[in-house]
Image (cartoon, rainbow, N blue to C red; front, side):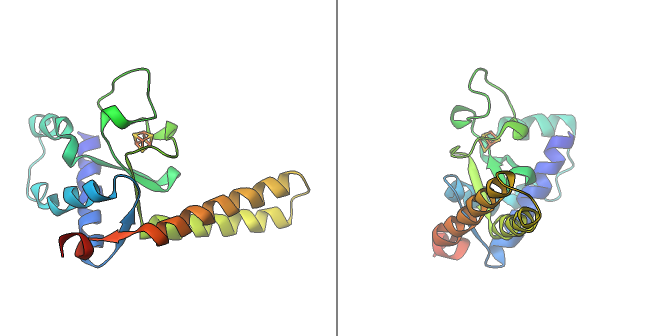
Length: 161
Ligand code: SF4
């Protein structure tokens, strides 16, 4: 129930972002847009345990926020890299794997990646080697992900014409 309510918020926020001209990137970006277009299906729905079960079973509708990994997960079981050994109804967000086909990244995630990179660089300035170098390398990696987002992002307007 809690999961479905959180998903409803996430999908509705994505819908609003896209309507406002925001962009998304990642292997699941196009289907993320399709899911967001249908976001109103959540609006006005009283979520009971029956509707929650129905929504959970509808993979097209389910987008999970994963702020720790700076992304959204548009979960499709067969593509999930976080639990190769077993089929699960929901993603293992704490074991998110870069390169998974379910990843969607928003402009806000890209901004947060850059913020995090700045924090790591500041920390590196006061940290002796080799840990300082590791922090700087991590910051570069996060900035690279943000740049990749900027280069590959698509918008609702581009997709729907
Ligand atoms: S690896 Fe990450 S993006 Fe892929 S299904 Fe798991 S949580 Fe979602």
